[in-house]
Image (cartoon, rainbow, N blue to C red; front, top):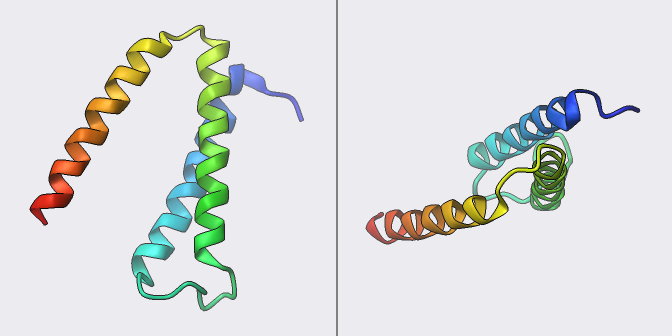
Amino acid sequence: MTMDKKGLTKLIEECGELIQIAAKKSAYMNDTIHPDGQNMDVRLEEEIADVLASIKFVSEKFNLNNGLIEYRKMNKLNMFGKYDKES
């Protein structure tokens, strides 16, 4: 398989797979095993890893500013933490 479009297609695909398992986990929040038999926690871990790998790949291919990405990531994490405490 070739990484056409500098990995953007793969990034989109991996994000889609993460969205699918996150939606399943949200629908069956108190269960580990989905009715289709898959372990949602394991799948969630796998898909997060795949998305992180594709993000790293695309970031390197486009020579993106990793300092800016890290800074924004930390700001978002802080914001998410605040939201979590409010709920």
